[in-house]
View 1 (cartoon, rainbow, N blue to C red):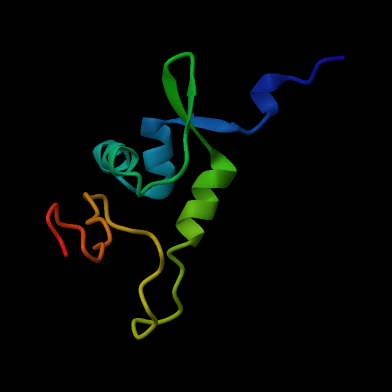
View 2: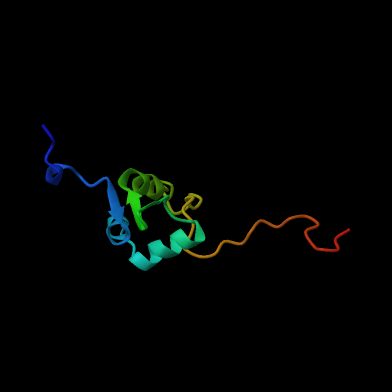
Length: 93
């Protein structure tokens, strides 16, 4: 006997639903995806989907207990500067 799929909780969410789940706009979640700062996602048949447990894990990375705690490890949705390399110039000595 097959389970009624209407009664099962969703395992994967599309971008719009995932953004609502996290309390973000769809555009912010798209930016996170572009810059590599957001939750992991999957491409299924050309569609971007997010696993609910991975959304929860990503959000948990930002957990802090007070304003004096160091910032959580969730980065803003913007391009991150690469780490500087010593002697990275073309003609560095």
